Image 1 (cartoon, rainbow, N blue to C red):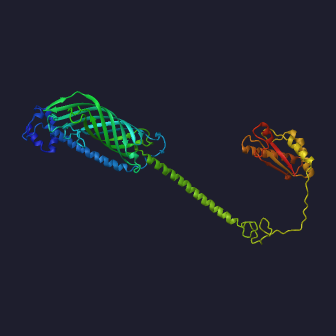
Image 2 (cartoon, rainbow, N blue to C red):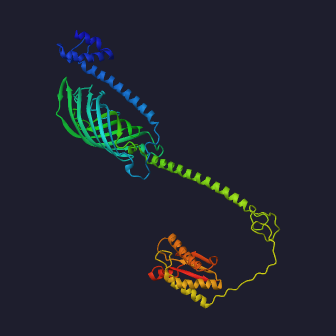
Image 3 (spheres, rainbow, N blue to C red):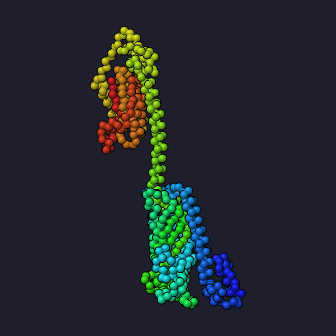
Length: 500
C-alpha cells in the first residue's frame, strides 16, 4: 500500500506537495522508515528529493513576493519630495537629523553564489530560511557603522560524491552571529541625483559566527560539535526610501566563514563561502519631525536651503520694487507740482498769477507786489562794555538745580539787571543752552533747551519783551572744554547770553 502511494504521488510537483504532508503521518504509523522505502518507480531515498523540490517551490513564491514588494516600494518612493532635508541647513549640526536606526530582515541562504565560486563540490542549489537584525549609527549621509545579527541555516547537496568530497549533503545551523560593519550609501554622495529615492549600498565587516554542521555520508548523518569562529560578511544591495525615516531593503550578502562550515576541510580555498539573499525594513529612531541622516544628501540640503532663501529674497525684492515704484510715482507727481513755468519762484501749484513777466517782484501767491514810497528808519544798536559786563555777570552767577531746568534763587539779582537792560535799551537777546556729554544725546538736548527757555521765561516775567528773546538748546554738541575731566564738564554746562 505504501509502495503504491509513493508511485502515484511522485510524478508531479502537486504530488510531491501532497507526499510531503503525508510523510509526517507515515512517521507515526507502523510502516518502516520512510527513507528505506523502494517503489516500482525506481526511486530510493525519496524524502530527500521531494522535500527539496517542495522547498524550491516555496522559495520561488518568496522571490516573487520580494520582487512585488520592490516594485511597490519603488512606486511609493517616487511620491516623496523634500522630506529627507526638511528643517535642515547645509552646515548645521547632526542634531538636525535622526542618526540611529534599526533594521530587520529575512531571506534565503545557499552555499552557492552568483559566480559559483568556492562551492566545495556542493553544486546543487539548496535554499534555507535565515533572518537578520541590526542597529546602526549614521556618522555621515554616506557612511554608518552597524552592529548586526544573523541566524538561520545553510545546506548543500553534492551530486558527485568522490574523494574530494565524500559527503552527499550537509546542513549547518547558525543559531547566532554578531558582526560590526561599515556601510556606504552611494546615492547620498551623488551630485546629479541629489535627492535619490533608490540608494545603492555596500557594507563590509567582521564578527563571530556560531555554527553546528551535520554531514551525510553514505546515508549516515554525522553531527560535528558547535563552534564559534571568525567570519567576514560583505553586503550589497539597494535601499528604497519609502517614507520619512523608513527604508525598504533588498540585499545580497556573501559570508566568508571557517573551513569547517560545510563539513569539508581543505580544498583549493581555506575558507568556506555562503550567500544570503534577503529583504527587510530599516526604521530611523527619534523624533518623526526630523529627517533621517541615512536618507539625506548634502547636495539636496544645499539646494533646498538655496531655494528657500531665494524665494524669501525674491519676495523681499518684489516688495521693495513695488515700494520704489510707488515712491517714484509720488516723486514724479511732486516734480510736476513744483514746476515754475513763469520763473517767478512760485510753483505752478501755488501760483495764483501764472505767466507773470520775468523779473517782476511777486508775493507768496505769485502775484506782482505793488511798491509804495516808504522811508525806512534803521535804528543802530550800540552795545557798550558796561552792557556786556552786566551780561557776563549774569552768565557767571547762573545756576540750576542738578539735572533740572529750575533756576536757583542766587541767580535772580544778576538776571534782574539783564532784564532791566533789555527793557531800557530794547536789546534783542539770544540764549544758547549747553551741556556736557554725560547721559544720552536726547536727554542733553532736551535739558539744554529747557534751561534756555527757563531763563527766557524769567526775563519775560520781569518785563522783557519775549519776542526779542530767542532760546535754543545745543546739548553737548558745542563744548568749550574737554569732557574728560570734572572741571571741563563743569565749563561745558552753561547758558550763553548774546545781546544785539
